[in-house]
Amino acid sequence: MRRKTDLPTRICQRCERPFRWRRKWARCWEEVRYCSERCRREARRLTRGTRRAP
Image 1 (tube, rainbow, N blue to C red):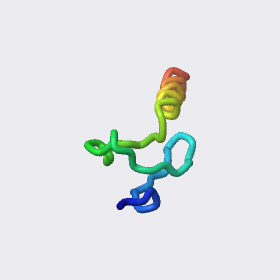
Image 2 (cartoon, rainbow, N blue to C red; image 1 turned 180 degrees about the vertical axis):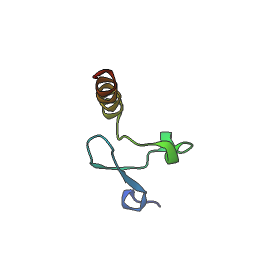
Image 3 (cartoon, helix red, strand yellow; image 1 turned 120 degrees about the vertical axis):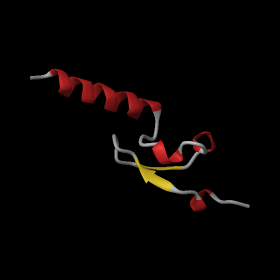
């Protein structure tokens, strides 16, 4: 049986907290950068704000 401690981990680019592999990410784990939808939305919001400013 597999344990949670055996699963791969990453550091979220937004909140800088570690997060573990999830089954829903099985096909796209290499592309996952954020731990949650909230972090993904927040990162997009922040990058949009800096691009608009002169």
